[in-house]
View 1 (tube, rainbow, N blue to C red):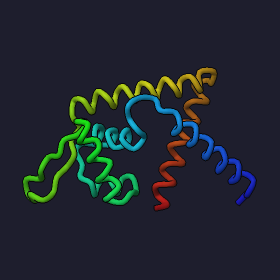
View 2 (view 1 turned 90 degrees about the vertical axis):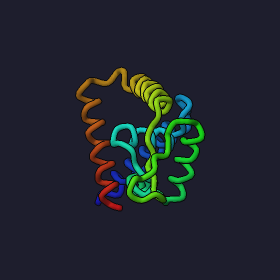
View 3 (view 1 turned 60 degrees about the vertical axis):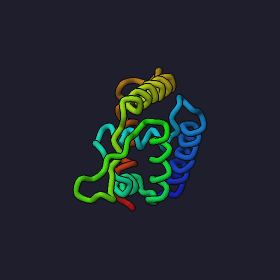
Length: 139
């Protein structure tokens, strides 16, 4: 492997992460945004499934989901088969906050790439997706 190319990618990822996680775009923290996004687009989910999706411990996701529940963004729905288990379902308030945050994030990204061609945006998006899929498969 070309160490220089890996060094460039590693540094640019670190800068990207720093720039996208330090500026708050709305009311939602990054973890809240990702959990709400997952539940909204893939349906109600339990703590274990969410932990597996994000490669986190169950206790971490449990704390994050509890914070979302306190804010009224999700509700616990008991499992009809196993009374001890439950899933989290997004509420109307959660959907509203998620969509507002998504708009804020898209506007911010749009500002950064406003002078890029559609082809450049497409290639960048495809490469980010490819990177994230490869990173997920490495777990």
